[in-house]
Amino acid sequence: MEKFTYQIGIEEDDERLDKWISGALTQLSRSYIQKCIKEGQVLVNDSPQKASYRLKVDDEILFRIPEAVEPSVCAENIPVSVLYEDADVLIVDKPKGMVVHPAPGHYSGTLVNAVLYHCREQLSGINGVLRPGIVHRIDRDTTGSLVICKNDLAHRDIASQLKDHTVTRSYRAIVHGVLMEEEGTINAPIGRDEKDRRRMAVNEKNGKSAVTHYKVLERFKEYTYVECRLETGRTHQIRVHMTSIGHPLLGDEVYGSRKTPYKLEGQTLHAYELGFIHPGTHEYMEVCAPLPAYFEHLLQIL
Image (cartoon, rainbow, N blue to C red; front, side, top):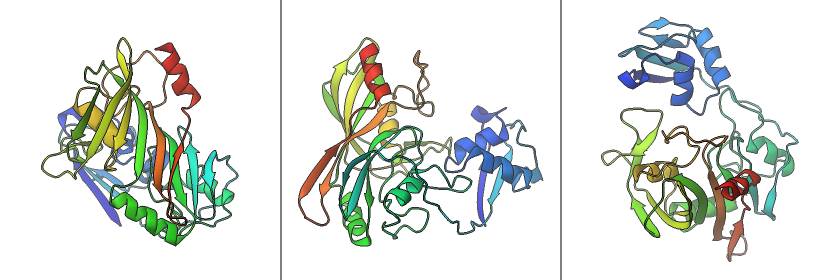
């Protein structure tokens, strides 16, 4: 049984127990967390509490995550926007709000469910039954290009390219504030935020190397439209790096503290361009995912 422990700090005082765990363990659905709380798997100061319990400074949280029963992840007839497909790889344009792969309490409606149906289960098995074909991920509220591997040979090849930082990954984002320089590079290690384990942060002591190159595409009165190219691929890298230089992503409720007048569902971040050496042809290929309608509309408004 996996255990998660944490001591509540002053910035988390008076937050609901279930809401706080949802932020701390983003891979778990809130309904699953509430189920665990109800079953006594979550203890506060060694005692079970209700999901509505209001946290207090110095509360000790213990979340005993039950051993996962190997689930049956089902193929689901969910439409997939295909950017490119052959016998080795499938490149899709992931929509906003879609989780990439199943996790405890969330076994349907994911991209994996969709591609299992689309590919008739012809996917690489290296990452197990929960992540067939998945060699890299993008956040739930990030849209855009994602490559799925149809066999183990393709999976190992592209995983190796990702490890060697030779895959082209270009994103489009809208950030708060007006960037004065035309372009720049953020070279700052990323790891868990030592003050809030639910977040990632620039962490010089325990972080892993992370490099993001950015370029201004267009300036507006209070925002900037930028291109970000990843040299590495750490969790929430662009969101953390742009926040670290004072320009959080518009709509980012986790890393951005500035309010927005626009009705958005999460950060304005789109995986625009994806390029790699094809594992079968051994030639370089590149695919672009068009900006989603909400992003284009927002640019027009700005």
